[in-house]
Image (cartoon, rainbow, N blue to C red; front, side, top):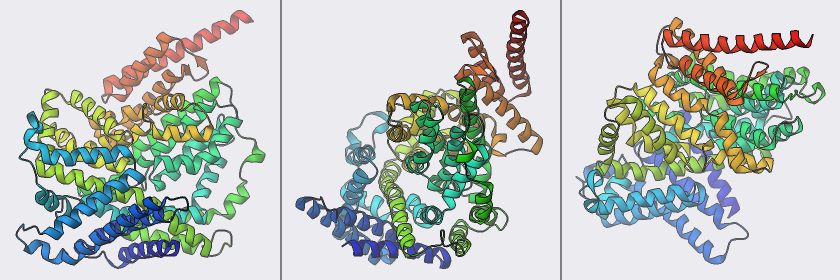
Length: 614
């Protein structure tokens, strides 16, 4: 059975590499094969666990058969669905229900109980619509209509979400697995170590930069924490960082990996698909906010290290320049990926598959890095493990999307949000932020984004928010929920590695990521930060945003340059940060004057103190 599972994994990876090169299977085929294989492999892997009870193995076997059956059935009727004139047959209902039950169970096991409960609530809502109060009321659905919308329709399970997973996301999951096994991912960490390790608070800066590079490819905050945190957290603790603070740095930086170009994790492909824009245009728009997020963490970490006199890593413990130069070819695949999308204007699928080929070619001449049979097995296993939660989340959220579209809830929800905000854009943005954080807690970013795009984005558009800014707004808050107490999953994962208090870690991670709460408001009110303006405007906005973020970091750490600050100065600096962040020349000048004024006061007090000592 293990051999069968592995063989299916080989077929899964080979199928997606083949279709990326020669074109996707027409109709529902690409999506059905993608989701069907993932479900069969997932339940088969559970079935062959050595400690599995016999009755649980029977349950697993049932779900293997149900997943395979629904896959075979939907492919067999694909060519006739459009010719039925809305007629639903008994077999449609049987296999539709089997797929929905299988998806919900896979979600419970692979993604989490919270998302499974949310889906069940929406299914219940589909049936009890006529009895719901106010804007929640709708005509109601029976099993035939639910099957038609969710299983056979283009707005349900086999809709936009699973299409993005089957066409784009899976390729970059495979690419990430190839990077891991060929040493490309490890090279990024070593590069960050060499560049930042020797500076004040070096280990924390290594964690920030390495997590940004690694997280862009991995697409999962928790996977990023595990991947880089095993190396960076012990190093930070050794150099003098408090256990919880070290874990928080890793959690915050790992969470931000999903907003860092060029890959931006899995969800970015969905955003590009929803907006109908080239993927590279989205990457270009997201670049400045992502850089500002990481610069903010670096600034805060630097101030913390200066305040606590934490030094860098000894030269003897850093990778040597010779070692980095000898392996410099390992950076070629990432450079190629950026060039292929930006200069050559290749499609996402062509860029992804060709980047895999370039990686294999680059590592052929190194016995340590080239792909052998053992590494190939690990790449296939890593690809399957990476694709499972994303594909399952995209599939199960398709159930929610189908019900929301079929019941009309999405349109009514937008009206309610606009009414509650009384037409005030600021209030609507705050409401959207709160809804995004709540829906994002304990739910993968991909699933959270899909629900928010359906329920909330239409309301933002009615208030004249730029569509690109609206989608990135909910995307950011869906991500930041990973470090927002009480359900800060990335912080809890990092705390586990650091063997420290998860609640305190969550608080520190929230503080370190505070710029991530402000940045979305910045680019909504000032789309120039999304490169939606001329060069001079972009430069001015970036400079003032950097000054504002520094003021914010200083306020959070109660420390500016080399001086400690009191509570009043801290509040004033926070106000300076807000003035510099709000777009407008007048507010920028006011914020800058306040920042310089605080520095002047501290410098004068220091000089006076030195003269008195002399």
